[in-house]
Amino acid sequence: MAAAPRVLSSKLKALTRLRCEIFQTSYNPKNLRTGAKYLRGNLTGPAMATYYPKVISLSQIAREFPKMGIVDSKEAQRKQDVEDRKRRGKGTPKKAKTKADSRRQAKRR
Amino acid sequence: MNNAGKALRNARVMRDMKARHGVLTNEVTRRAYLYVARNTTLPPQVRHQAQLQLNTFGKYTRPTTVKNRCAETGRGRGVISEFALCRTQFRLRALAGELNGIKKACW
Image (cartoon, rainbow over all chains, first blue to last red; front, side, top):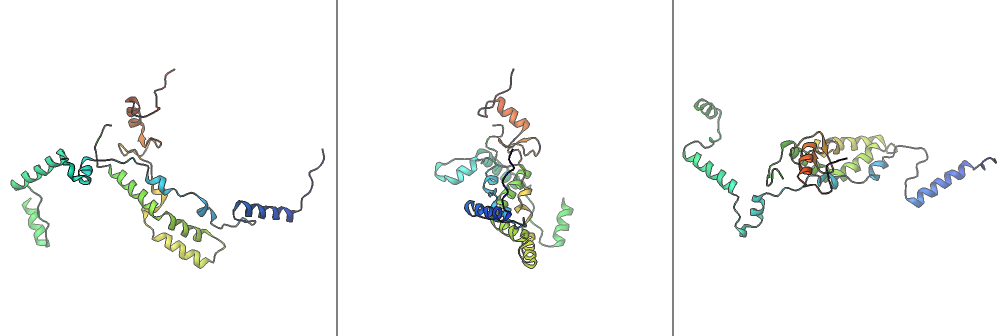
């Protein structure tokens, strides 16, 4: 079997350079860390953002199309309950403005 | 669907969604800074500045903070990413015939 023909290293280098030019890759014969890999990779954000399927709620539809007159019965019931509780004096307490206020409210509870 | 019309998601899923949104909005600038910071052919001062800039980005802009969770239960382990479901929910859905092309093995 005949030995493979010897190729000059300078010629090989020229070939690599030419190849890089043609395929538009960076010519880096010394294998320096040029950070090219951070620019080369595809962007992953758009795929990441669409992982969870969109959840459509009734209230969302009602907000989008107010003319349709959709009523979210659960939400309406909740609001009604809160109103009833307020009337009975069981609503959320007012935010304390001063330290003394907060102490008084803590005592009352 | 078990929780049809459920608008609120698990808190962990919400956090993950936040991370995903952060990654999406900051990815290009982060990559640019990474390129400068990791480029050994650039002067060290410039690289250091870029690294400092990278450090100013929030926790939820790094793609490593994103985890594929179950969209139904928020479970972080045993998730079949293709369907965004954990193994239990995947099984339930598959048995209910809600996943196209998925069939229980039988031989």
